[in-house]
Amino acid sequence: MGSEKVISFWSCCGNFDGKKRGKKQASWRVFSLKELHSATNKFNYDNKLGEGGFGSVYWGQLWDGSQIAVKRLKVWSNIADTEFAVEVEILARVQHKNLLSLRGYCAEGQERLIVYDYMPNLSLQSHLHGQHSAECLLGWNRRMKIAIGSAEGILYLHHQATLHIIHRDIKGSNVLLDSDFKARVADFGFAKLVPDDATNVTTKVKSTHGYLVPEYALLGKANTSCDVFDFGILLLELVSGRKPIEKVSSTVKRSIFDWALLLVCEKKYSEVVDPRLNGEYVEEEVKRVVLVAMICAQSQPEKRPTMLDVVELLKGKSKEKISQIENNEMFRTTPIGEYNAGASVAEDSSAEKELKHELEENTERL
Picture 1 (cartoon, helix red, strand yellow):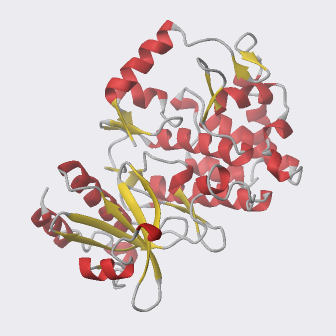
Picture 2 (cartoon, helix red, strand yellow):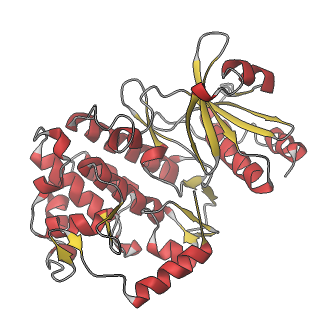
């Protein structure tokens, strides 16, 4: 898809959300490449905030002093151009306090750039596992607000946007934090619009290690329950400070879900908590968040809650439902024999190896 197609795409999508916007003008605009070169000091290395499979993100400052983040996609390709168009279209469609706002875009020559508001506290991942992890700036109250805020952002995508949206890449690096540590769900390059009469969309598998939804990996069918699964893994990360997948030995890896399951079966919720919190947390809230995380990340998609349920549960609006979750059959039997002090000690079974081989062949990861 060349630049002509991008321009055509924009000319036809300007009034897609007329009901909600009314006569309000779009908050985004088209930037020139010259303007973004100037703002980022010619995409100087010192301005780089991070990079991934998509390309790099740079800090910048516009002529009026406002700070921006500029995603610069890798050297032009049909795939990059498609992901660029998808992300910009979806960002332009959505408006919610817990979603990252679009400032604009640039499509000149082979350059594809997306401009956002700059989030001074970077990403959730940077605080849990990255450059800010040692500072422990995320106290329990902040973590609860991040959990609820990001849940409300995903709820909007699933149930309140004009066309329902499956994000397909919910993870710590895609939850950004503003100056007040308010969560903003970001990165819609993998997202899919879902028609009103559809429950699933079939697509190439795209996911990140540790967040790969079982049924999505095998069938390539994405629906909102895939985002719910990923959000469950994210909640466990947020509470525990652990990574989605941890290496136990040279041959064994353990998922955060398997590690937490043993503790939840024994009702040891406090042992799931990030030790960096030094015991400063609300026990009832920890229990609530952990239980919600576990039912979100369970392997059977039909048993996962909707994001409407998740937000209600996280806000503590239904203690009766939390009690019902605690008595769920998945927590009644401790998986003895598969764990040693919370760690899986068995090597991958032949079935698991076969599944991994299949995923390696069919999965495109970041």
